[in-house]
Amino acid sequence: MAMAMMTMRRAVALGARHIPAAPAASSRVVPLRHMSADAGAAMEKILSVGLLRTQGLIAGKWVDAYDGKTIEVQNPATGEVLANVPCMGSRETSDAIASAHSTFYSWSKFTASERSKALRKWYDLIISHKEELALLMTLEQGKPMKEALGEVNYGASFIEYFAEEAKRIYGDIIPSTLSDRRLLVLKQPVGVVGAITPWNFPLAMITRKVGPALACGCTVVVKPSEFTPLTALAAADLALQAGIPAGALNVVMGNAPEIGDALLQSTQVRKITFTGSTAVGKKLMAGSANTVKKVSLELGGNAPCIVFDDADIDVAVKGSLAAKFRNSGQTCVCANRILVQEGIYEKFATAFIKAVQSLKVGNGLEESTSQGPLINEAAVQKVEKFINDATSKGANVMLGGKRHSLGMSFYEPTVVGNVSNDMLLFREEVFGPVAPLIPFKTVEEAVNMANDTNAGLAAYIFTKSIPRSWRVSESLEYGLVGVNEGIISTEVAPFGGVKQSGLGREGSKYGIDEYLELKYICMGNLG
Ligand code: ADP
Image 1 (cartoon, rainbow, N blue to C red):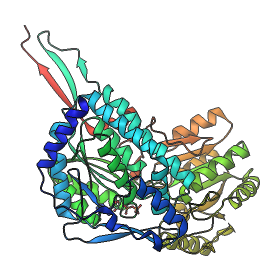
Image 2 (tube, rainbow, N blue to C red):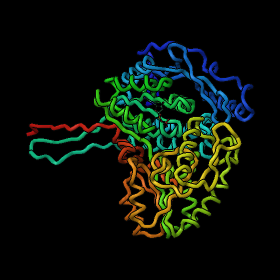
Image 3 (cartoon, rainbow, N blue to C red):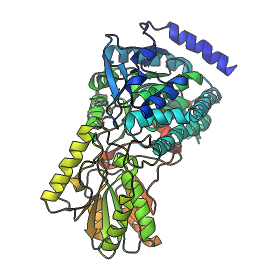
Image 4 (tube, protein in one colour):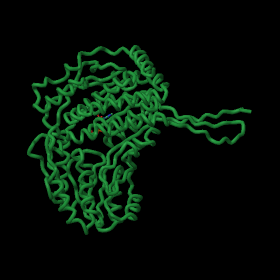
């Protein structure tokens, strides 16, 4: 019955909009014969299950940009064009907002159980299309298939978790100050949410936002990165198949500043949630002031990874390798500075370099690959700039330090020694496969160095001492701390930064609060 109701509501939402019809999606896909064998076979698999969507989604309709303009989606491993997607702007975004706004009134009235069931179905569909989604992600983003499959599980876990959490959005009854009154607190969805996401986690950064938003009755306009829209569109297709009503989830992409401005200026958008660069996050925060929107920001990090003299060397190497080289160093929680106590420095450096040498660089579609390409040429140029800056100031390249012989945007996994706090490698996020090693003497010195940044997202420490684990974890000005562990993100724990790394938390029981408003109801004159 719930599903029948959803179908009816979807029809109402669809009828309300007048979105121009668009040609078949397949016309936007580059002919497979023009692709390399691997990519062509992967695309064929994705096409065969109908998950190669190349249009935006507004009010449940797949649409082109109103002026017909498109942008290319490229495979960073080969430079091949995979597809063309619409280059949308303010007009399409306004329609997406209107669709989300009108659907809000129906979706927010669904019972928690109905919303939960639709989300659960979406989760099941994502999992049953794990392989195709991972292929899509590897093709457009470059990450190795193993990591892409991991991201599908991770991304889906937010939908599963918030499907469950939808049923647990409890209010409160407050003991009254007067005997004839009752004081209640109701939690209600904030309204239309604008979600802007980056390319490094093409699925998980979307589900981490859309899961809790839909769970509590909000509707969403998502703007994925123009580098990785195909995964987002495939996930949105599965949401429709799951019975998430048309208009509850809209996807637009193209001219980022124009789409961003349309979201910011709209009084109907009540919340902006963003993952991306600190510079764009600050713009979105400032732009939200005019209409006083709720804002969640997950911005850049500058993660310290502190290896103390008493660390288990194998645990420290394994953990820092994972924290540094996951996604070829392109995550905001990647270890950006590896601080190593002087007593263990030589031993750690030797073991770490050996581990880095074993990383296999290549096309993510190849099974043996553990390091894919960087997202584009600009990313490689940034890495080169940081390496040049470091070596000109006295750092020494211990491994790698140049573009990989595969060409394109492949860069050699790199270890740089003797990095100091005046270098870009220390001060800013390199967002690439470069591990800077920084020697230190005392615990206090390590903590001071770790906190010597405006960022405050993730930090890692390696030590066998329990008292030190506590003391250092408490002193680190970071939102997440991994102790003897390099991969710590999970849907059940709060993810987010302090200082200029952002506002708010995603995932976990805390993450849903970002999409809720508290309403205090005072019932008086009860006799
Ligand atoms: P990155 O450097 O990791 O790509 P960005 O902050 O540039 O980080 O991008 C993250 C997301 O923000 C992407 O979807 C991008 O298109 C979007 N974006 C970039 N500039 C703007 C803007 N002015 N307004 C709204 N969104 C933007």
